[in-house]
Image (cartoon, rainbow, N blue to C red; front, side, top):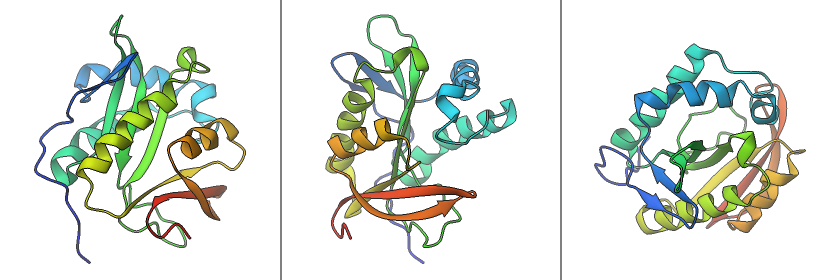
Length: 185
């Protein structure tokens, strides 16, 4: 098996949108991450249960490591005016145990604190993240996995150019796989 690496980035590049700043994760993001991943409005469609502090710590370190290992990863989403933590978004290779396997295409994902919901921020952020990925990605596609009943995230994905590819099961739950780019079937 060969791996495609974008470049030797050590950390996430900063990206500004109209209302947000995307930046690299820092250790001080741990507490707001714990709060977000224990909010039922967040985990309901993603994990189905709150994340423990230990799981969130591992997630934080995994996000930091993606950039140096693969040249892409997740960003923290900050409010440009207040600097408040609004969530996280980006791309990853989580090596999910799924059938069929997802392969090596970067997997897009996003999660915003519940106070940021309903303002179009997920779409704003993911369009900016995809613009960066389109300019730096040697892969011919990206994908995302979503709960079939999370219609809001499906709309965000569609606005970013994703199309339904197939349905499967992940971690015992029904899962929709959506693809963007070449070989959309």
